[in-house]
Image (cartoon, rainbow over all chains, first blue to last red; front, side, top):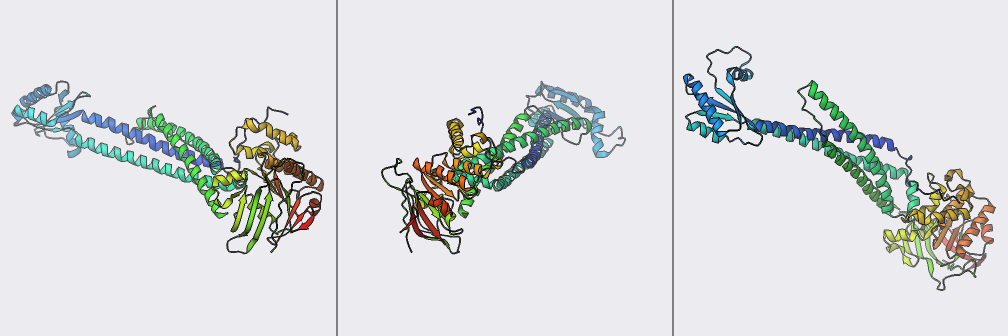
Amino acid sequence: MDNSENTVSQPLLNTAADNARSLIIVLAIMSFLAALALLFSLSADRLRNNWQGELQRTATVQLLVSSPDLRDAETETALKTLRTVLPSADIAPLGDVKSRELLTPWLGNIDLPEDLPLPVLISVKLEADDMLSPPLIITALGEEGLIAEIDDHSRWSDQIGQSARGLKAAALAILALIFGASIAVSAFATQAALSTQRDVIQVLVQVGAEDGFIAKLFIKQAGLRGLKGSVIGAALGLVAATALSLRTAKDTALLPDLNVNWTDSFYLILMVAGLTLICSAAAGFTTFRLLRRERRRS
Amino acid sequence: MPIINPVSSPVDPLAAKPSAITDVVRFERVGLRYGRGPEILSDVNMRLARGSFTFLTGPSGAGKSTLLKLCYLTLKQSRGLINLFESDISIMSRAEQQATKRRIGVVLQDFRLIEHLSVFENVALPLRVTGEPRETYRQDVMELLQWVGLGHVMEAMPQTLSGGEQQRAAIARAVISKPDLLIADEPTGNVDPVIGRRLLRLFSEMNRMGATVLIATHDINLISEFSADVIRIEDGQLLSGLQNGHAHG
């Protein structure tokens, strides 16, 4: 008798009986979309952090000079005061040319009269760890007899934060929808598999297989198919996002910078694991449910 | 209505049997109907003692297969009591039912071999579903396949086998777990008389080793060649019992 044979069990479910390839393709497409949504969400988050960080470290002080004759003197006093209050900050007046440029969006590209009274604008750039306190600066300038307003860009920062949060929420909602669709796809596929493998299940039940044993077969099958599909989709999604990030950085300023970090692959692995688990769980739940229903019918 | 009491005797009275006679199968006023239709089985009373060998006979459509299905728990009775191994099946949990099924070997007329599994895998199925490691049963399966003359085709797929070989594979699957109750539905229906007799001798061997055997067949000639109890069913009712070819009851 040849003992070298029969060392590995054959799969009890007929893998050729149902259309596994179609299911893997559908799961790969969903995983691809989920990967893009996830990477987009992560990029949007990073972008928000970068932009907000940059905005929070800059401010513009607008000095309202009391008379044109005192413009230079008051500017000098303001610079001195600001450098005292914010010793580590980079403080510099914007100058007339830059001030006129800032008016262009409001007044159009026209030649402004030379004697147009422009406010004195002073740019403040803080070190990374410094915090800006507009009331403190206004008080310090006020003690020198200067009237000033400070634009700390918080309005823009808040708007960027809101927009980024909205984008992130939309991406996560898409992700949730894709996960939900994966549950439905896996449940339908299991239902179809249970139908096509009806003869096998009948024999298994007849020889005394427990529901758990049968469910495990479908859980394993769905898990493997989910893993295959989601790995393929995630890999393609990563490639597409990387290509897109290179393209957007070079070709257009309209799209946000979809820079992909190596740390994103950790989240992609989590997503693949999630999709695999979802497929397995949906298959197990469907198998138990249908076996119970079948028993009630008989 | 006559109540049949085929408390069967073993084929070989010299074979070792448990001293206490207990019922492996007991039916009391069992009825079966589908939905609101007429009863397919009516007031069936039946007892199969441990170690008995019994033929169930009757014309086609009489209810033989249905009665067997009740015995191997594929159908549930509409009324009456069914005890298997002295347990009421109506109060068994799902797990208990499946555990009971593992004590029953079933050979069906259409064999029910799984086409994408080799002969070895088909025969090993009852052991595999219990979660036993493959190493613990591999040798047993191979030996049984040799014993039933399928050693040379154990890696073959069922559809490549002849009818007789498929039949032997189905029987091997039914007996591999050494069941306490062996049920066969027309096991000789698809094979020639010579193979049919050989298969029945295999069942006799199983019976000699302690299994209770219940075989449905309409082949009266075959029945007459074997020393066994006989139950006859017609139109869903047990009519009379024949013991060793003679009517009683």
